[in-house]
Amino acid sequence: MLRYILLLIVFASAQVYAQKTGTVSLDFKTKAINFPTGSFQKGDAIQLSITNYNANLYKLEIGDVDTAAVAPPNNGTLISGLQDDGNLAKLVANLSSAVVAAAPLAVAGNKSMFADFPPKKPKDELSVEDVQQLEIDTILNMQHELYSLKQDAEWILYKYREQFLVQTVPAVSCDLSFDAEIKEIAHNMDSLRSALLDLRYRLEVRTIRYVRNISKYAEKIEKDKGLKNNDTLIRKYYEDISTSVIAAQENVDLDHQATLICNLRVLQLTSSGCYVSLPMYLLDDVKKVTISITPRYDSLNLGSYKTTFMLPWVQHKVWGISAGIYTSTLYNDVYSGQQQSDSTFSIVQEKHSGKMEFGINALAYTGWNVTGDKSCNYLGMAFGIGMSVSEKPKPRVLLGMSFITGEKNRLMVSAGLIAGFVNRLSSAYKENTTYSGTPGTFVKDGIKPGAFLSVNYSFLN
Image 1 (cartoon, rainbow, N blue to C red):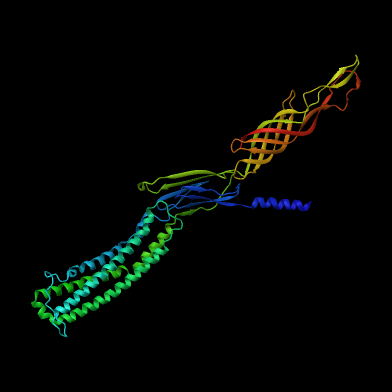
Image 2 (cartoon, helix red, strand yellow):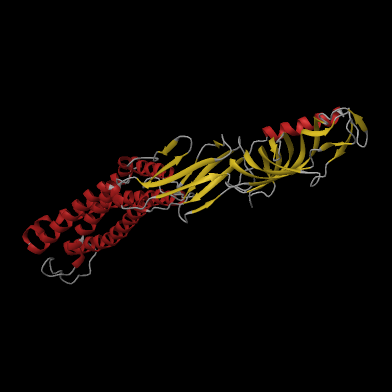
């Protein structure tokens, strides 16, 4: 016997301390809410998971015991600072300047701008015309290379700006990741930096070589207007292109690259469209939770969303006070004295409608859900007091099992034991026995048990 008692205590303890935790998930993109399955009761905990919402555009508020406003992961000033792509824009501008600087030389052969080179004569030493023509060909090749580098820079700028487009999208994925894009941008900047370094070196070599090769023809160039114009254009190109390339190199140096990558990392951390609350405990049988998602600024012209729900949907345990009517197997015996002669009488039991009674009662009850989350049906127990409906009402005590159905308007059917005072023949008398004297009180009150069936309505849940 002791073993079973211990097992019962262990089982009861497990039921008390076996705390459950469930998650309520709200997908802001689809506006769908998923609730945890299983029965929850007082003492259990829930967590709210809000997914696919942009915390930089929307303010999330959760109304529980206290209202908690979820602060944005950053503010508008920080986002604007991160999005500062002025350095990349300057990179594109500098490379654009380098391309434009070569534009005058792109029309090689134009008689109005360049000297009309005479046909080459076969000889070992290059003429001044040969030197300038060779330089113009080299510059045209560089222009094509610069144009390609400019496209690379524009692509880096585009990819960088593209990451910030997430700030304008209301629904943002939880698994938003910039890892691949960050690696691509870093790799492209490394490649562009290497290409600019190589181009700068070749520019310096070409500039020195041109000055050295053309210096021997200084007197001839001074006398020839066309040659002098070509020399001026070539020297100016090398000067302008060198300035632009040097500036572009500064735009993609390691310090600027580190700043850009750091900005993207911060953006990645602050742009996750997920929020998971701390556990919220069911301090009562039912918890009311409100989720409100509103625009952070009126100027955004975005819609607001709000929903309120109760947890659990179907209570695991209910209690309340009810009132109803009952019928029971208790009844009162009725006896009368029948006069036999002037000095004698006998005891006769009166006929009655049946061995049961009707009455009213007030029952307190508690019950546990037996149909899970499907419906509000409970089995439990009830106890309370009642009063018989008779010529002389008598108090009753009721204790039994109950079936309860309904969420707010609950109907309860109970059956069990009932006890109370009933009229029974006094032990001083017996039926069909003749007594002398004057008839007195033949019955007395005695407590008797019985069975009852009751139908009740719960007015306090």
